[in-house]
Length: 340
Ligand SMILES: *[C@@H]1O[C@H](CO)[C@@H](O)[C@H](O)[C@H]1NC(C)=O
Ligand SMILES: *[C@@H]1O[C@H](CO)[C@@H](O)[C@H](O)[C@H]1NC(C)=O
Ligand SMILES: *[C@@H]1O[C@H](CO)[C@@H](O)[C@H](O)[C@H]1NC(C)=O
Image 1 (tube, rainbow, N blue to C red):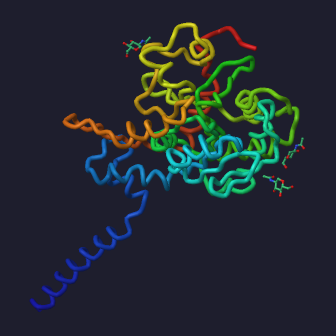
Image 2 (cartoon, rainbow, N blue to C red):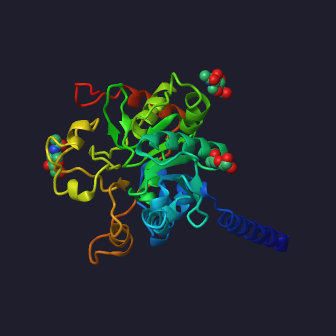
């Protein structure tokens, strides 16, 4: 009798331990989120292990295809630098060019090189991404070959948002149409649904999406507006921009008052506090600067300071996402005069 009870108790204990072991082995990404990071309370990540793997985990969770606008004359210079630095952190990197290049992964989009053709090239690039990759990635980033992107910050920023919602993010400029457009040089990112809408309903319709020689960014912004894609707000909680269409030397220590950034930005920038500490992009990168960014961002450590902990924001529910989109659609510029 006593032996039977003992066996039962031992059996229960072993069973419970095995269950825990099983749980441990089968820990998935979602559980990583809820156990290690406590997303709903936005708690800091405590262990060095969790912090090191947050970027890795996000790499699989928030998948970004990067479309980089380049040309054959830049294949061995700027494009090669993009590929060996930030571009290597994209889930997939495609250079949009007018010549194939297997080393680079450049695609010949059959559009002849000229400034007037950038918009045509961009249309072909988005069509290519849609045709070959729309289901394989969550977000589709357009950048120039002189944009520098901090991919980890891009993923952390995008993580809360549903890629099946019609939205795009970037540095928002104002223009003659109400919702403005995102700067091409700072890079802008389309959700999967935005890419789908662009291809299904805009690129085949010259009323929504005219063929012309306008600037690529302005024109794509117009096409997206016409198919119901919201211009999202990518500023941080203190109103500082994350996508920056300038070189840091023109942003720090101060943006000059009355310069084009001050005039054209949809939201009035704080001239003396321009840039988010979770900034995503800078523009006008020179050949020697890609590696400098790498050094300052990924190698240099300031020893002896308390470490900054990353926080994984909570993912929005469908309803919260809808409310965000309504809010973004109603956000109006800090400036009232429309531009041409
Ligand atoms: C460009 O044209 C060539 C030759 O017609 C074709 O094989 C290729 O698929 C085209 N590329 C794209 C991206 O459409
Ligand atoms: C564009 O394609 C969509 C989806 O196939 C179709 O519903 C729409 O009518 C097309 N628009 C034009 C102007 O052809
Ligand atoms: C601009 O940034 C500075 C420095 O962070 C801050 O003191 C100031 O209050 C900000 N101004 C506005 C209008 O937010």
